Image (cartoon, rainbow, N blue to C red):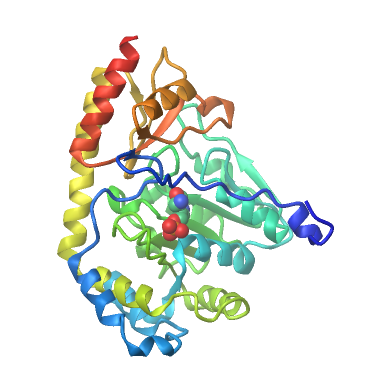
Length: 354
Ligand code: PMP
């Protein structure tokens, strides 16, 4: 605390990202990174960018990358916004589209950055409890609001909402923006991008951090009708005109264009998820159905915090959330390679046997 801080800073409760430990040889299953590396074409593109041209600013509008993302999704380029990770895209969406007179709605168990943005920007919010089976019930959101946001699949539960339910939300909520955060959609769900043409209030956000194995490059994007994209651009250009450097623009474009590699990455993670879920069930773990690159799981007779601590003693890091109380028995575990999953399973087998 300091008397030099602004009142806003005094009141902030910053987001705490999952730990990035400096130790080598850890089985790191705590931040939903991809266990495999990015496309070799990404590395080639990055090498090509390491050139004299670094003295020049990058394209402020990331034009080629936007066009590449637009082509991938089959939409016009003026429906695409790109940012420094989807966290930045989400931050701009809160400021540009969700700051109105009424509270923004999101689930009580969801991505914990949302309330942080609300605090930063002075946006009221109301949390809506997930059902007893940790599902989003759309009827609960059909009430006056300043906007709605949730991830699909949700985090940290991994549970997927069917596209038909999202459409029901859009049809019943025509007057405020609905942001669907698709950070994990490539691991098993249908994207809401196909609804953008019909719903002027829909913004879909995505990231290259998970399914493209590019968490270190920091690239995220949004798809929506041009009036929503213009709002995001206005905020971006009032904050930082060059959020994506030359490496990020070139690397992200190479990844978006390498469809075959991307699909093989997703398929490998999905196969390992199926294998891990089946093995955990054999150890009496409850595992919520997951459409993501992580699972949310707990054991009926073992405390979540203690399980996480026991795994850490064996150099395996997973994520445990103390709050709210009803998820404190769960662990969020990122899908690793099959070898990492086996190490995890051996450790859990030994721990639950004690
Ligand atoms: N949305 C959700 C639901 C997430 O879990 C994350 C990752 N922490 C993000 C968005 C942000 O991802 P990134 O900034 O790496 O694109």
